[in-house]
Length: 520
Image 1: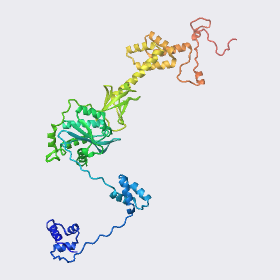
Image 2 (image 1 turned 60 degrees about the vertical axis):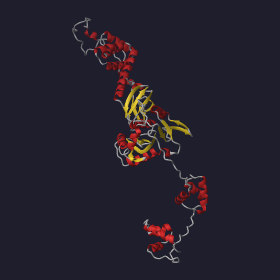
Image 3 (image 1 turned 180 degrees about the vertical axis):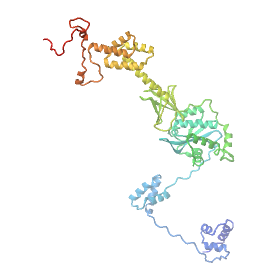
């Protein structure tokens, strides 16, 4: 082998001008290192001078997969997304003895790759467009509840100004609130908002037929912007917000500490107005995003004079206890609205309970789970109602059994007596003596002008004794005990006051001898 003059010139140029090393020259020009060194040493290279040649590469060893390669290539051409695990099972049925790990690497090299697609750089006019998306940033543990930490991100497509707001869910009310807060932060509204095909924006899509979320359409009608979803599997059409979320993960959220959601949102707001706004603007590195946004702000649509009605509105049912269940927690309501269907209007900090347009209760929102959030006034009114209900039930029972009891209570109230204790005492007497006896005793107490349960009790006892009835008992006593309570009529002692001769007064002249037997 000889070295041609043009190859010698190329070796000298690469080493002297380009500063290539000997190994690099030998590897790139496919010549031996010794030949390169000889040229660089200035040794004459004659036409027939022997030059060591590069060692020939050893032949490739045969692989177990070689007999199955045509089958794998044909299968992948027909089914490009078929998994390596399924392919491995197929070739094992055909006699392949290799393991799955090495087979997966070999299939990855044989799998057909889609042709590289070129993309046009999309440019937008100032104030024309913004891009919106959610970003998931893990979870927060609040008491016993594990809440997802979601970031609402809106990016102005022209200036790349970022709005960032964290929520504890990704429901439609948080989605709409993020829009409203972003428009306030930007002091204007873009004409077009681009969305991925998320359920908060697009409920259903078949080709070009799109059914938007009605809540988003109401928001768009209020702020006069056009919601526009990107084509399916075309994330590049909203690449600005995708890159913004990656930028937020790396430059803001990584390693950040915060005490609660409000603290995190305060830090996010300061970051958006600070470091994120001071970064270089991609369309002109001599300007910052803040400067580009200042020029774009006048091109945004003006905010409407009235704010959009925000809040999560759901229908709830009150059971037999005065509480409604909302988002894993119970909130108290007035006891007068049990067994009713009410509406809850909630935001990040407040839970309002409505009956039509009337607000029944307002509570601070709890993000824990299994908690009871109560208004002390609701419980106090319920306790008062229960006491009043017991009194009303007693009065109704007395009025039906002994109508004269109402008059007795009126006179007792005029004297300033405790009506509750009087009612309870009369109910006990009613249970013991019966309705008819109580009515008669109350009438007698009123005739004596003593409107008190003691007077009624004495009248009942006199009537019982006069009728020879046994004392009333609350319990059923055994027979041998009941016999002991048999009424005994006292003997008339008037005869002991008479004389033996029959005269009514005075002492007898001679007492009878107790030892003398009486005459028969």
